[in-house]
Length: 132
Image (cartoon, rainbow, N blue to C red):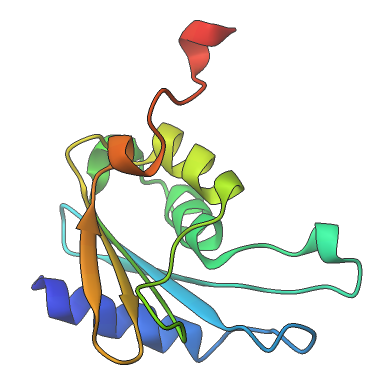
């Protein structure tokens, strides 16, 4: 899948966001080695702590369908931001554990700005299983 197509898929996911409180809709799409795409969108709750981000929803969606870290090749995230959207700290931690180090991470906005990141650039010195 082309990078632009993965960003479009993240936009499809963004359209499914439930953000009645913040009005800040985010979409994410995970692309697998066998060509599948899994969508995720942020889903808010009146009790903000119970809300879930798009990035985690997309990764968890793929995992619930039997996919593992080594099956993922691309992750795109999109939001209506001035510069390309950036994952929150919780999502960075989850990405560092569930997404492969050599996978492509695309951060985008609705204006067409895109940056490519690696897992290590999103969360250097991440807490992982060796720290337990």
